[in-house]
Image (cartoon, rainbow, N blue to C red; front, side):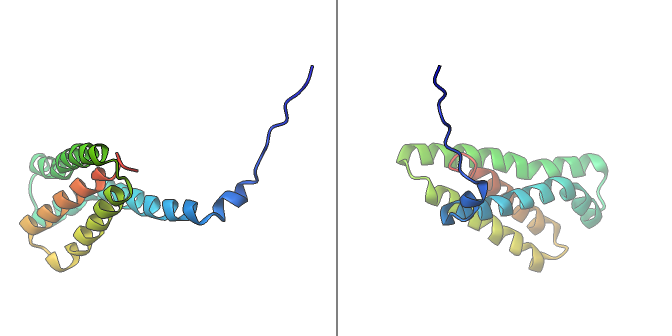
Length: 130
């Protein structure tokens, strides 16, 4: 009985590939921002607004709902056009801009929630194309 030889590649070789690194970096940034929003958004809104927990829960839901619409629209358009790179890069860049604009927004709750909703919409929009 003959054994087949498997070709193995050292994993270090993959991490030296420029294309892999170009994919890993945006994925790392997107997952970090997503985890931060998921874990800290309720606390942030509660401290900023002073609203009761039930209203804070509703406000936390807004970025996820926007994300659902962003995911469906961007995924549909990406499938229709067959283009993937820009359907990934543009939403991730918009997430970064939305979150950077939170800094000057300060304690203005409606503006902060609008930016978080936009960020959530763009954050989930890149998943179908990635």
